[in-house]
Amino acid sequence: ENSEQLAGTETATCGKLLTDSRLDVEEAAAMFRYYADVAEQEPAEEDVPHNTPGFRSTLLHVPVGVVAAITPWNYPLLMAA
Image (cartoon, rainbow, N blue to C red; front, side, top):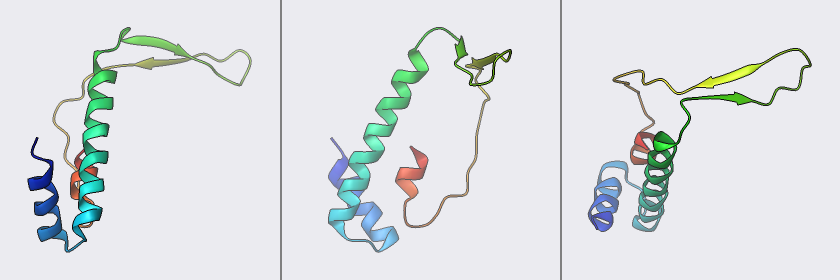
């Protein structure tokens, strides 16, 4: 819905081509959709296959709260996703 405006902003702030910014916006939207789906998946705990006999790996989905990041100047929208 706002992809053209986001692409324009990315172009203005990063100095990249508008065609590149449009691709970045599409990719960022896909990343947001992917992680939104992952966040809704159950269970909160799952076993992960391990290559070493006798070892067990468990993946826990635990919210960590607010996260901050320093992002590269040329892909800010993609890094936010």
